[in-house]
Image (spheres, rainbow, N blue to C red):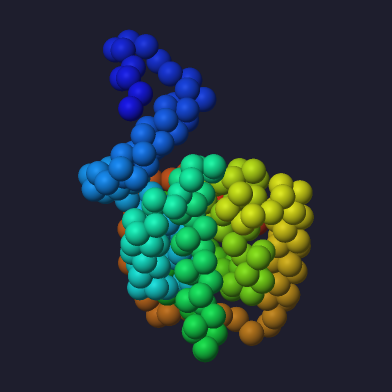
Length: 243
């Protein structure tokens, strides 16, 4: 474990990242040596991000919860096989992604995005600032956005989920997906192009989305409300906060 920072001293962002990495490495080493409390600490550290990733991939809270639990059970059973050649969280992400893709394949009936999709609700909660009128204005936009995301191929979808929604760097995503940084960059470019096309097509469709008589209750989140419609990149980022 890294020594605590003396009172009054400040760490730079880079130092903070390095300290967290050292701490995570120490927890992994302890877990590999049979310390159950160390693995519990790893679960607390990464559970939220794994659940969010699974929710992005499936759109189902129940599936996401099952995937999260299964990913940690598999990680616990196989942690002795983790060789430490990459970060622990990239190894864990790979386990969760494989499970999420299997769940999608097992669902014979393709899931359609509806107006109560939890990913849509989260994005609205962040961007509406608790304003009901703003929430109604954003609902159609985000529903189209998530539908476009769900139409992406598994490779493009996982790349977008890891980078634009989970905040992984191109090198980190390349490790998780066992590819190159250049391939990651191309996939993001291609995914953006496909999603823009799908959204533009949907917005030109004269058939409107049927909004519910009452909007779902959205927990008020203190966030700055943009004066203009969000760009695709901003909208994608809004799908990532607390889920």
